[in-house]
Image 1 (cartoon, rainbow, N blue to C red):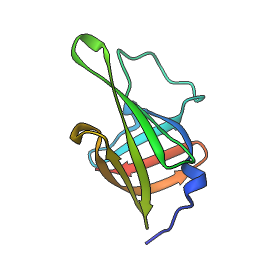
Image 2: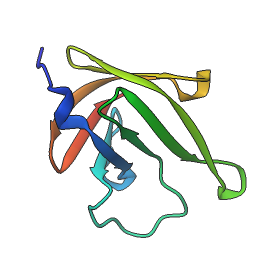
Image 3: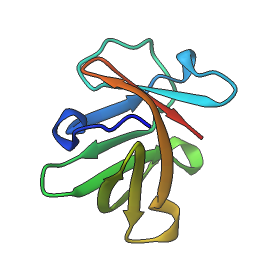
Image 4: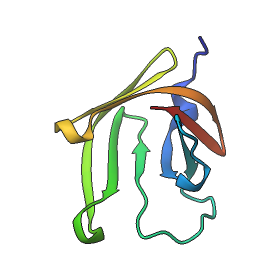
Length: 103
């Protein structure tokens, strides 16, 4: 199992759904150019172990969430302040330009 350093995951990651596969989701840094979309999910992993996220909601209005995040080996765990903001993903790969998570 690959280990990841928390510092390498800090920042805002935007869902590049065009690059997804059947079992993997691809995220790019917020600075990465992406084609227009009606709404994109993003999350920001902060150095203090907090996170914020935004997902497209009803009528395309963003729905925000927040909580704490951690790494457990190669698992990225987001423990939200509410159940909708809680996620656990297996990290398939991570570098400065691309984060791939298994659902």
